[in-house]
Length: 256
Image (tube, rainbow, N blue to C red; front, side, top):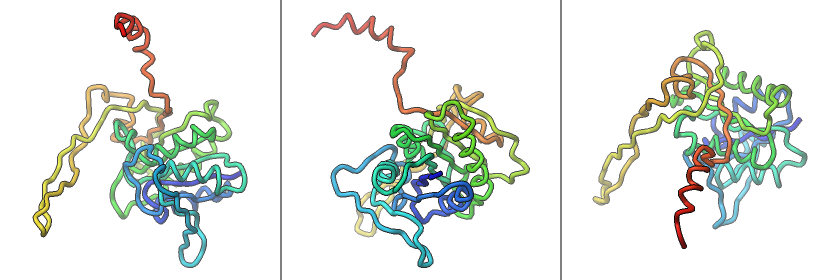
């Protein structure tokens, strides 16, 4: 089997390394990842400049392909150009920080998995619910291996990507695995105004996550908060089907 591994934290990120170490036990893994961090770039792709690709090395050994682009770029070029044989599964992660609620829309990690699905390859995004630079990825990597095998051999909906979020707590404290819906929890933005030495004004985005009433139960955010692994089936069709008929009725009243 051939897996394509990517992320949005950059090719040298520890989470990607842990993922490679674990998934390589079951498959031939090719790493195609951004050369630098691409967090929160969403599903952006590069069209206004050449997509530069170089061999990335660590301790003198080839470790994968570093792309001067976004996670979606990495999946596109990885599947179309860099893999010398068909890819059975795309796995994106392990992200440093949860990808739940509205943040899913901004996530480069999730967008890489979505791109894999668009191109017809079963795909998984996996994130660890912490921003600590000392994060322990070992359990999340082992769980990613289980999800990969499930996706390939037992999941009847292999064409639908899975967004997996693992709580950053000791393995013995994890309360279980639950299938969730995407919630509406979102970052309530604040901007910290600062002035540089030349008296130019600049801003840093900050804020805290706020939960809405729709997050009362069954959502990715609440599962993670309660110490459970959240698995959410996601898709790239953003149509609100429940609004189609009413909108068609009202739009008919408009005249050119």
